[in-house]
Length: 275
Image (cartoon, rainbow, N blue to C red; front, side, top):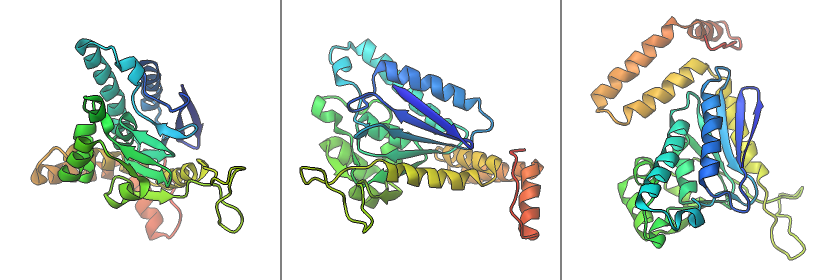
């Protein structure tokens, strides 16, 4: 259900639960184990999460949830929130390469990532109210922090599904790429029925390009920046500035800081080692 690849300090996590990569208990537990191992990896520089096939994550497993008791639903929500908290607190940036449907739990997975890159075929939404429930894996909290209170309430209350272009417009997505196979002229390749052929490669390539760029920077600085941003969200501006100053001056005890500034002054490429 979970497949991983590792190259040059960049891990790619593939959701692979055909046909729509829904979040069931088994998948969440497997994903949790993968993230626990990544937390221990000091050579890790970035993580990309994406879906196999036509969906990123189409939501939580409704068939599994249908007959849950309130107690069982509580445990399921806690499991899902715990796993997504690992994405949010991982010591390196996590990039969501959203290649198709990202509904309900899929939007929540994307929200737990640091950066979201979407194929133009991607679809987002929190349609849980159509099932007489609400988002349970962090949607009511992270969506508002991402796009603002009013728009998040609109999406959650209506259950509307939006396209990638709208998601980009409201700030849910940071980058859009094509989601179709293109010929040498840049035109969409069509199948035997005349329909454009979808392609997951462009969004994954864009995520890998961004991950490579991040991996080239000072790894301890990236770690401290993520900590400062995430921890500062729950503080006053004054407290956040104190936190930032602390993270800033702590980096001056690292070899990477000396290397980075010396490389700049001497107009050469730095060789960061995470020390």
